[in-house]
Amino acid sequence: MLIGIIALAALAIPTLLVINAPRQLPRRPHRVPPVALANRVVPKEELPPVEPVAIADLSPEDARAFNASIPFSTDPNPAARPFHLSGSVESQQRAIDCLAAAEVYEAGDDAVGERAVAQVVLNRIRHPAFPKTVCGVVFQGSERSTGCQFTFSCDGALQRWSPTPAAWARARAIATMALHGAVFRPVGHATHYHTDWVVPYWSASLDKIVALHSHLFFRWAGWWGTPPAFNRSYIAEEPQIALLGKLSPTHQGATAAETAPLGDPGATGLLFDVQKVAASLPESALPASVAGDQNVFLVTLPDDMLPDLYPAIALRTCGDRPYCKFMAWSDPARKPARLPPTGEQAAAMSFSYLRDERVQYVKALWNCEQFRRPNPAQCMRRQAAPAPPPALPPSPDVSPLDGVRRKPAAQNKAGAAAPATPAPSTASSD
Image (cartoon, rainbow, N blue to C red; front, side):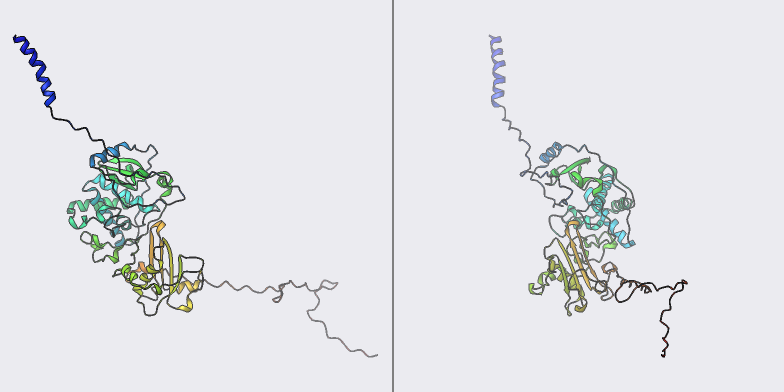
């Protein structure tokens, strides 16, 4: 009897445990990004777009799973060429501080991460798709609350916290070495990176080449990620960045309109908001473009307009054109009617503005012989008038009237040349 009770209990107890066990929810599968990620390889004939940083709606766990599913590129990963900083002492100090800020705010107080971030910035400077200054690359898009290329430049991080003096000193030391020839080889020619717990929409269009700690580094697929694509030169005119004023003495005293990075529409070095002034100009005041080219304007400047306002009329005139050339003269008599201007007309030009979004370039220049500017970088280069060609001596055998070579003078039988003028005749008498 006892044995029967024990046997019954041995069967009943497991059954009761199974029946009353808590239900296990099915494991939630990893979500994929809510929209298909682009994966087109941009051909050599087309400049790849620099897309704003947009993040797929994924949890950190799902993002890590998605990133892990993307294989690393098996193509070669050559190191970048050494970078050598140039320009004035002040410009170089601005470059060092912009690069140091990118390092410490993007990677934290981590030497390996800071070196990797610095190399990505220098790679971007050499690539045609990005601005051509250190500060221009680091603060590209910082005037927008979203869409900046380096998140710290537009999310308020610079106002919320500052690195310790020791961390800032190390970031500046790493930046100085990178700008004077030190190369961080592991990231090769990477132009993009992100942490492994997010998935930017651009990631599927690029080659994943290396992982460092929690960061993944990418380069463009196809020709645009190869060394020959990194062929642009550095422009040694670093702008002031007002956001860095509390960290950098060389960036102190700048205003927002004064510090727009090269490549942004407001990069004019002025003490007011040029774009607001431009928006206030009436449409009727805008000049017409040159016949046959809707992107080129030859303009006579108003007599009553301050020189500081010239960029405003240029911005209003160019509108949203990705390429625009604006050339202006104070003296209407010296303004050419068509292109190209003569040497004298070019030397008399008062103001010029050029925008080319394909290479992220914007530049406004004044004729500093006509208008004094606070910064020599705002001055046009003086164009020497072409020297007149030397006068050639006239050839004795060439007629100045018809260009036909004269017939050589007749010679007498003795070989002497005939006289140039006939001897006077003598009258004869019958």
